[in-house]
Every structure is written in C-alpha cells, then in structure tokens.
Amino acid sequence: MIHALHSILLATRPKTLPAGLVAVVAGCVVVHKFSVTFPQLHISVNYQLAVFTAISCMCIQIACNLFNDALDAGHHADTAHRQGPLRITAGGRMSARSVKTWAAFFLILASTAAIPLVQAQGMSVILIGIPCLICAYTYTGGPYPIAYHGLGELFVFLFFGLVAVIGTVFVQIGWQSGYEIIYIAATMVGAICGLLSCVLIEVNNIRDRAEDATTGKCTLAVRLGDKRARGLAMAFLVAPYAVLHQLSRVLPGVGWNWFWVAALLTGGIILHRLMHTPADKRMNVLLGLSSLHLALYISALMLG
Image 1 (cartoon, rainbow, N blue to C red):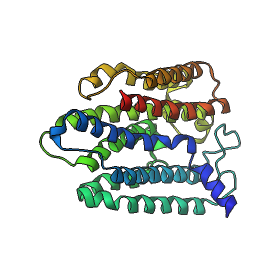
Image 2: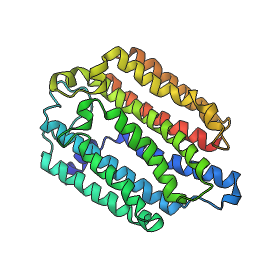
Image 3: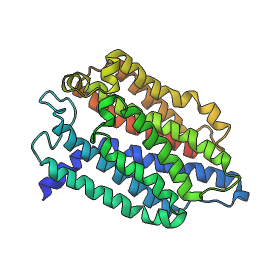
Image 4: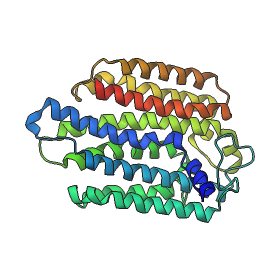
C-alpha cells in the first residue's frame, strides 16, 4: 500500500501542483484588493469557499497528471530515453488501469469539493466545472489528445489561468452590475497566471522534445524546434512584467515590496538556465523554479 501511494505521489508531479493552487489564491487576491479599496461594493473573501475551490482545482490537476501518466504509456510516448521524472505506468510500477482508477477518484473528489461552490453560486459553477473535468482526460486522451497536437500551452493558459482565476472570483462574489472592473482585473491576473504556468509546460516539452518527436507527440516544442521553443518560454516569463503598469491601472493596491526582488531574481535565474541548460534531465530543476516564480509573483501582487 505504501509503495502504491508513493508511486501515485510521483505521478501527481508535485513540482507542478502549485500552478492550480496559486491561481485560486490570485483570484482571492483580486477580490480582497477591491474589498479593501472599495468597501461600498460590500464584497469580501469567503475563505471556506476558497479552500473548497483550491481542493477542487488541485484534484482536477492531479487527475490530469495521472491520466497523462497512464495514457502516454498507452501511446508509447514514454520511452527508455525519457529525461523527465519517472513515469509510474511506463516504468512498470503500476498498471494503466490502476492509475486511471486513481485519476477517476480525484475527479470524483474534485466534484465533491465543488458542491459548496454550486450551493453558493448555482448551476453556473457546473457549467465552468464540466469542461475542466472533461479536459483533464482529453489533455492526453480521446480521439484528439490536446497535448499531442501542439495545444498544451493553450490548454494551460485557459484552464490554469483564465478559468481558474475568473472562476474563483465568480465563486467568491457572483455577478451583478458594477462588478465589471473586478472581472477585467481578474482577466488580466488570469492571463498572467496562465502565462507563468505555460513556462512549466514549455520547460517540460523542451526537455522531452527529442523523445516526443520520435513517438508522434507533436507538442509545440516539437513543432517550433529547440531554439524557438526556448524563446517562447522566455516570452511567457517576461510578458507578465511587461503588463504590470497596465494591471496597476485596473487592480488597486499594486505596489513595491520585497517579493518583487525575489520574483525578479528567480525569473532571471530561469531565463539564464533556459538559455544555457541542455534539453535533458538537468532541466528538471526549472520545473520547481518556475512554480516558485509563479508563487513569488502572485505574492508580490498580494502584498503590494
């Protein structure tokens, strides 16, 4: 049992999990800043709903990673030349059926955690949640796997950025006239979260590009080639800083704090390593650094 749990933990890809959690935090940051600056809006962060939102989002992300592990093995996309962390299905540690069962379990858990969200804001939450549940599987499964057709970055930008942040804001405050500026800010913050989350997937795809090219997994990195894929990852990293001035015009309370120094230093390290690290297992450290950078950036927004 302990061996199985350890294997499942590996398959969840812990270094990438902050992406889903940070997006929920970012949505709550938007609500908090408007509640403090404009008390006449009569809004506030509901921390209980925030916790259930975070649990649901992270369970969907875990399910997606587990389906990815099992389905990539079925597509023979994980070979002996893999440079990334161990895949438990291709590595023979668990059967594809068992891994898919665990993935389904986490989707059920995500749906259960979403019940209080539906109670708070009604059936609209279900309309947001159903595509998320479906795409957790279709990212690497179904007749047209998203990740196999160079659409992984778009998927991450939408679901780990826009949907997660705007959805969190909706769960917190619903919708009514006068909230338009809040949702404009949420859209900008969601785009930022999406771009910084795309750094994670691009690093992953650059590392695996040579292997993916031999297995029919046509990621964007395979289509672009190594040099242009690295340039794209750098653009994903730099763009959120380029729009900070515009963000400060719609999101109140964006200002200087020491977290910006930490975020910039971490971002600089990532940029340097993107330019110089070979496309092999040495890139794995960039996954953790990219997750850290995402958390630092949102922390800087929160404390500004």
